[in-house]
Image (cartoon, rainbow, N blue to C red):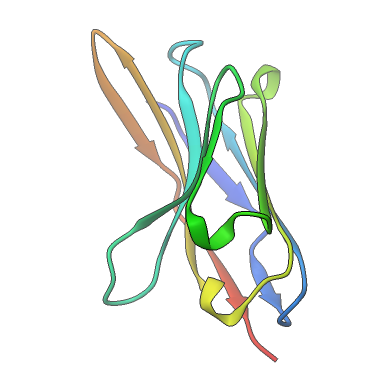
Length: 118
């Protein structure tokens, strides 16, 4: 069972920056996708950014140019650098690990709160 431990959330003023980190306890398979999702009360969880193990990244339109995802495969860790934060970025951010080895594996972190407010 892969365990994901997130860190780096908090309260920041509009225009500020935060960096989220997520460390996986292990990697089931070297070919995988790690990413960040977010959720606000009453809404579905949405993909923010995800990156394959070979470095291909995808972002949701609302964060393009402001957020940057990166990963360190040797440490099974994924990061999300969030700049120019807006109040609408306020959400609980969840780390995700996904891979397919015979069957599909999908793991989630416990979530970290990001609040953008003056």
